[in-house]
Image (cartoon, rainbow, N blue to C red; front, top):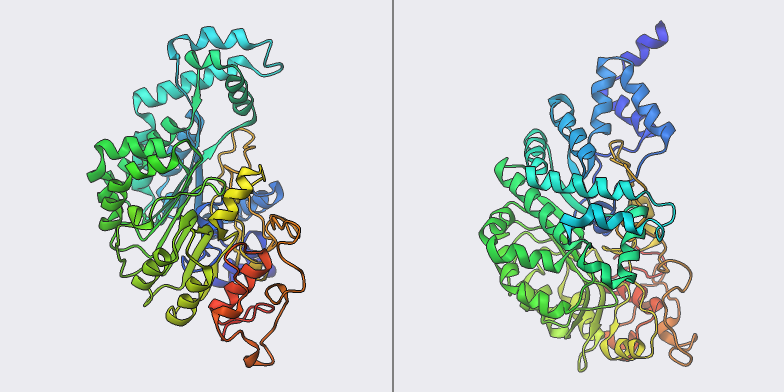
Length: 518
């Protein structure tokens, strides 16, 4: 009895520390200006905790009313729901318990592909595939199709989302994630191999993305949600086009509330053309989003955008911007310098993933500007930067162009302690979420998924004993720094992984071997 009384006598702060040993505190969200924020907070899918961890937390909450309330802070800080009848019922159940709903700070909406074409014949078409699909349960696909149609027609999802967002009074961050279970993946693959089926049945992401974005956005507006962060690692250009045709004012109203916006567009045909068509929508959004502190806009690494930077950003200057990122873009040096200059007074983090310099531009010019003019920069990410000409030559030769997951892998092994990985005890895992890209699995290797991975070094490209590849350290001698960008070894052709890591540290005046800044 004395021991029990002693535990109850502990302060809430100490009990929260104890809970950290059961499960890392999910309230410790990574700050938007941290290098790990994008991959850990915005684009990383929630992971289901180990069964014993979830059970430990549940047991802790059953001890007494006080422990139940403290445990709820952990258990419900992050809620994940799948677009399905079961997922929406569960979400409504949480929303109906204000003492739990008030703790939700991050809401992840897992959206599957939609069954669309030939809806009137789905129940006739699917059974004919049974022999080709082996052990797959055809009845399950018919059930999924009927469920999707019913949810959309009755607007049940929008009703539940409005109820949930109204109840989530502490909500900070909403993300839309694409999810594909193993059976849907097998059916999708089968349909793609048999073009004749496309007229009868298709499984598409664009309508699913468009519907979920519209309903979630409507719920945010209708409930005056306090949420100020929105991210989606697999946004469909087609869905965005559909929204832009009729709902620019609606989207601008949402943008006014945002402090963080992170979007990664998935692969698609005519990406330049489609993004060009979205230029007006981006102008409306970015002009309205006056409170933005963090912005990221990314594209597939193997399909970099060729539009001008300002075709999307329209020379907008955000007074509060502290972190900016783009991924997979062919640019001139002046374009990067121009945007950085507009935000040099506050910008702390700059992510330039898979950015390729066009002919006539050099990375050393960008690096020199960042080092000399961007005095507030704490970190720069240059993962797989390079030159457009060399990239196009590799592509023509059939070389594999690797893709990071949306948002990229963690930037360096020396920041692992800063990646506050937390797990959601409320994941709606109805089925096996097997798409590793859609789920945002992350690698924490600074060598980009393994030693020397994706170096793309061809024979004779970079000799191992050149100054650019040599390790140097300034911890003991501050004069060991290269004095100018001319000494960085930029040849205007190729950037190795070793070079880009050294350049990242040089820009922020940090030791490339040990990482600390000056």
